[in-house]
Length: 111
Image (cartoon, rainbow, N blue to C red; front, side):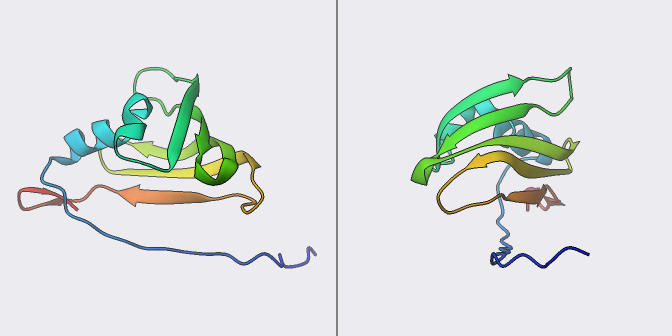
């Protein structure tokens, strides 16, 4: 039996509405060549494995605070949902991380 981690875990939930279709929003947010246009925490991006058409990429990032990591997708379901886990994390603060995003069509856009 393993011992519980002494590191605190943080969960954040947020929702926002964007006046764009789920497909358009998905394509914009999942295009790592454009990530720095809207995600100020990302300083550099290297696509490690682009994957086949429609397949999830693996991406190495350099982020604010001296963080480097490889982003590994667990789910890549255009245009509905993504989930990622951070691997090979190098940081004085973080041991790992990840997240999940849903693209839900709402009247005139996506939540």
